[in-house]
Image 1 (tube, rainbow, N blue to C red):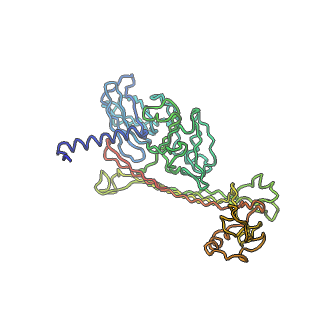
Image 2: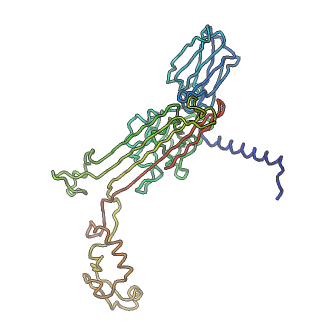
Image 3: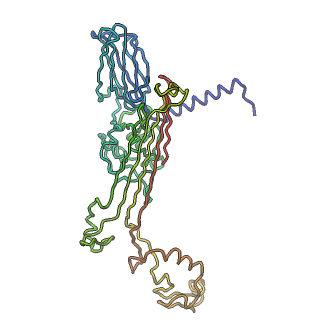
Length: 463
C-alpha cells in the first residue's frame, strides 16, 4: 500500500471534511433565520457605513455585527430562533434601537430603519411588531411558537396535533397518547396528516434539521420532543426552497429550546383518570358490563390511570477561562444550557379484541369432552390398525396413563395461571387485560458562542 505524503494527507482530510459538510447541508432542514433591512434618513436617502448590532434578547450577547452598503442595506444570516434587539448607529444621527425583533426558523425578518438627525447619545427606541408578513420567499408556511405549543390545550401533550392548525391540513389522527413508532398494543403510531391533499406518507418531519421520518412506512416518526422543549416548529405547505423539497406533501421542522442569561425552571403534571370520566354508551347498555356494576346499579367504568409529569431547567453556564464567561460572575457567560425531562405512566384495561383459545378447567385435569385414542399415533392416523386403547369422554387421563412430568409443569406454570374460557362452547377467552406503558425522556442542549461569527450547539435526546 502506497504511503500518503505529508502534503497529500492534509489535502485529503480537508476534501473529506468539505464533502461531509456539503452532505450535511444537503440533507438538513434550515434551522435558523435572518434579519435583513435598510437604513435611511428622514428624506429617504440611504445611509452608508451605519453600524448594525444584533443582540440576543435572551442571552444579552451580541450575535452579529453588520455595516450598511452603498444602498444602505444590511443582512445578518444564520440567526438562531429567538428575539433580538437591533441597534443602528451612524455619525450625526440619533441611535436607533429596535426591540422585540423575533426571528422564526427559515424566516427572513425585514427591519427597515429611519434615522433622525441628532447626537448619537440620543436614543430612539421602537417596539417592533411581533407579527410580520413574509415577503422574501414564495414558500407558504405556518409557524407554531413554543409558547403556543405549551399553552394551547392538548389532551395528550403530543405536538403532532398542532400541525392540524395550519391551513390546508386535514387529518385522521386518533388519541395519539403514545409516542414512538409503535404502541403497547403492537399497532403503528401512524400520523395520518394530509397537507394540501397529498398522501400522509409524503410528509417529511425533522427535529433541529435532522430527518426523523421513519423511512420504512413514511407515516410514523422516530422522535417526539417534549412540548416544553420546543422553541417553535414550522409547517411548509407549498413552493418549497431547495433544502426543503424532499417530499411532495408538508415539511414539518421542529426547533428545540436553548438557555438564556437567567435561570428558569418549570414543573408540571397532567392527569387523566376514569374517576373523571363518564361511562360509554355500550357499557351502560350491556346487561353484563365487563367490569360489573356499582352499588347504585350503574355499570363500572373501564379503569384508566394516566399521569404525565416533568420539569425543565435552563440558564447560563460559567466555564473558567472559556470564551468570555467564567473568570468572574460579574461577566456574562457565552455558554447556556437547557434540560427537560418528561415521564408518562399509563395504566388502562382494554378488552382483548382477538379472543384466545384456552383449555377449560376439566381439560387442564386431563378430562376431555370427546373420546381420545391413546394408541400409537401412526396407527391411529394412517388406519393401519384400529385404535385399541381409547380414553372415553369424561374419564381422567391419569386413570389410563401417567402424565408426562414436562407436560404437568406446563399445565402448572402456564395454563393453570390463565382464567377459564369465557365461552364454554368455543373455549375462547376474552379477558380485561391490564395495559402498562411507561415512558421517560430526557433532552439536554448546550449552546456556546465563540464570537459574533461562530456559535455551536449540542443536543442529546434519550427516550
